[in-house]
Image 1 (cartoon, rainbow, N blue to C red):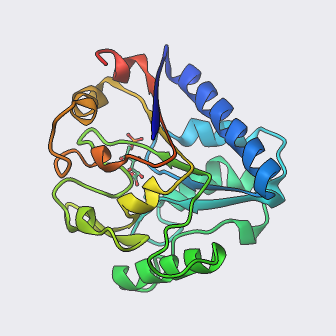
Image 2: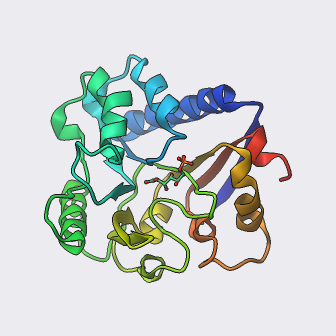
Amino acid sequence: MNKTVEVLPDQSALVARALELILSKLETAIGQRGRFTIALSGGSTPKPLYEAIAAEKLPWDKIHVFWGDERYVPPDHPDSNELMARRAWLDRVDIPAANIHAIPTLEGDPAASATKYEQHLQEFFNCSPGEFPALDVALQGMGDDGHTASLFPHTEALKVSDRLITVGNKDGNPRITFTYPFINSARSVIFVVAGANKRPALAQVFAPVADDSTYPSRLIQPQGELWWLLDEEAGLEL
Ligand code: 6PG
């Protein structure tokens, strides 16, 4: 793994750098493999980044979008990560509907939805159970508790290492999430983290020794590239 940490002066510089890095990975992927695959994170930080991507002129038919996690709500629910990304980006560009690989959340059973998404991924990447296909980019956020995707501290999801997708749990509310080994299989994992409230967790995630179960972002140690893009608020003491 090669790890790069960049601290940008403010959130707009952070977004600009994240855009530049993603576009670079996109160009390489399409050049080498004819397509670009990216898993999106939810929450609030990535919204301006998605808006910036939507303003680019890109070969949308060669771009495939997945989600690294999703709240277990319908796709029109205000908490939906899919809804946020569609409004900020996907509804604004000519990306084919078939290239938008949303996490199913209407089965009424999170475990069934997780299995359904995993099967979809296995079909898309033409891989067998037990294989971890490589996305070009896994875009990650980090909560102020050190979680990423929906891998929350001290939850069962952190113990799942033989699946692509599992059921996360936030305060008793189910989530559908990439497992940490699936995130780690990406060619490039890019964290985009902003705000002073993330500083304490970042210090623990970056510490030589700390508890992975308490700070789950520590589990993200990809075989490929690991990028941490931080604004000054978040990255001040690193
Ligand atoms: C989600 C995200 C989650 C997010 C972090 C950071 O579903 O909420 O995938 O992992 O990235 O909670 O969220 P903010 O960017 O809003 O701080």
